[in-house]
Length: 133
Image (cartoon, rainbow, N blue to C red; front, top):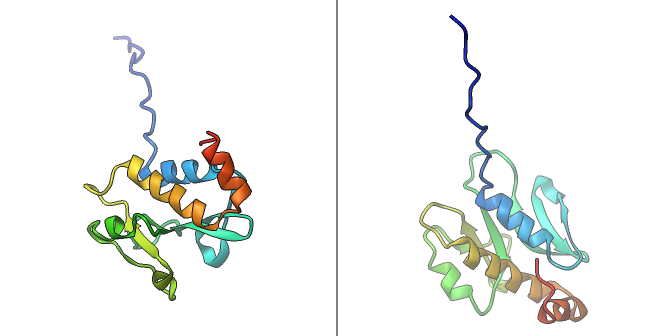
């Protein structure tokens, strides 16, 4: 008896919400990833505009972003909370990537809003001119 070669194609791995949010954030003008305190953060200049947490561990994947216009909306997400270390008082919100949470388009809108809070005006002007990730 001879074996037939499998005709199944390998299944491509779907990007996780975390990977998609990271890719979107890194597409913002002059954004880069850094790893202070053992966590993944995305910065513009020397300022963090999104905290993505650390890989592994027992925490739920999510992000922390600085919001004003969308702060109330983000706080209504199940499991959302003000960011610790006093950042919550400045508008930072922890948003989990739990199933049933906000769609990716909302999460990336919040990343952009956070970017606009910390990026220099000349870089936010690029977004207004249509340079989008």
